[in-house]
Length: 318
Image 1 (cartoon, rainbow, N blue to C red):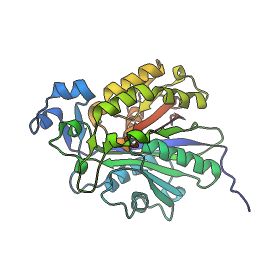
Image 2 (cartoon, one colour):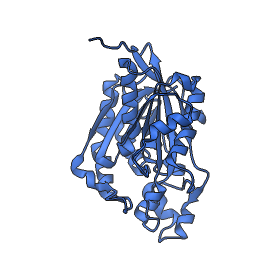
Image 3 (cartoon, rainbow, N blue to C red):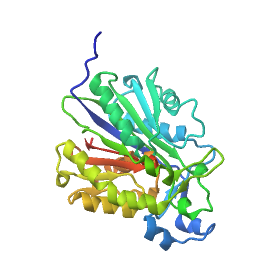
Image 4 (cartoon, rainbow, N blue to C red):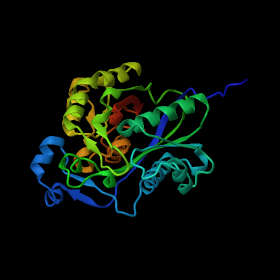
């Protein structure tokens, strides 16, 4: 029996993102439920979010973001041999998203599968892509996080309607002579899995906000620090900290306890809301587009949420 020979390392070659055109402000929500802009911003830090149209699917969002990442990478669709899509909001589970996204982008006969680790999904998928390139199972991988939360939300429930949104982010991962993606640190707290749940196909998303908030602000900063340690990076060396865009208060609490004093902190949630598996690649893609982070700098990506699953790794910014 023979083993495949992979690349010494892997790195992210490029990011891409896509948001639906429809902007929903806090004032728009206040017109339909008992809430207001001050209440929302003081609790979760969101000013507005994007909501997809009825005829715009998770696949459509993923194709837009994936196409931008592929174009920015300098590769063609022929160069991609594996597509991984992280999502938890598909209307149906069969067929998977990855195969359809690949087909729409002209990627012929790739390996294609979906990952459901909810808000940590992109970091899980990125770890799988890194391992595949290093093991020789794939050469270039398209990784997409895409979510359409709007059909799963009760738009009269201010506990969830003010938070979740739609969007997609993507990355292309390719071979490298030196590591550009650090070791993943991941885990889960299954005893708290009921804190974020969709009970059945006829139900909306339910979240126990205080339970999630306490868990995220007390249990996760050591995991984020461990991801830095396993990559051989001091948090003070980070150019960027890109956590899942769950809640602005959670983001700032983890960043403060991590000690990433020089890092640019992603705060995409203010204008994008919580887009679950899409939030990390979308936030970093927008930071790169705005010139807020340096190419070659180090970024800590850190996802956490339903499951309750979490994962993080340090990457070199393309």
